[in-house]
Length: 327
Image 1 (cartoon, rainbow, N blue to C red):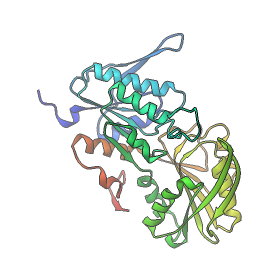
Image 2: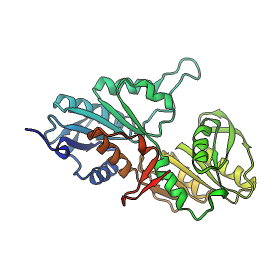
Image 3: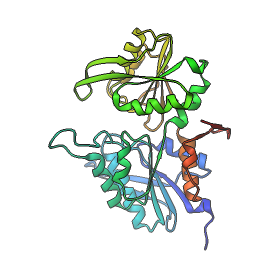
Image 4: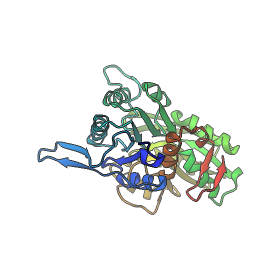
């Protein structure tokens, strides 16, 4: 029996991002698949699909945020789907954890981003959908197709909605590594950008920071893929504000927000922190505005199922109300 396109697709979730997965399924026009995780007394767990997936295209939504149980749960679900005769297994990983370990910048350390790519492929994944990887070269760690979505699809419409003249906006990168991202945003709006040059004493600890560029009388938007402790972002915002900027806000795709990061944001000079829901917020904050990735992930799934190009997802923004805006 030939299945309809909708019936061919099953969207499931791991425990880390169940709320997002439910919204993605709703935007796609289906219900979230029925799966459970059995927990043993010693901490061991076992995912199980509670419906038939034979011959189906199975999409598993799970960000690999700490603890590592979330990564292992995704691997186990991929393995279970393959053993249940799924036609295809596609891992939807809104936040690809361990992505900061993408190169050997000193001796005797692992290349963990590559290790996880190998593990996903060994489990039997057929395709990956992810968003704003920390480093573009991670795409080359996979031998299966990888669809890399960008946070700009969320942030550019938000920027356009701000009551700020476009010519008064200036983009900023909190470090040299993010200068390419800031440059792409600046090119899209025909603006310029500045860079905060920093030196670290050790991971998550900044030594010195200097500003490269003029921000006087500008509304500055700091851009990055990850905000972890918040120290870099808060320090960069303070430096920019002291250098004459009218306002400073940050737009970050993945809100890791470890420890007291939210408190730092609330006590900073930032007007607001705009993030996506690739990682659930630990607690709400008046200074943090969350934009949902549900429509973007659902549209990527729809196009993959229908063998359509997702290339123009990088060039257009499709709002949840159906309005299309050219970037």
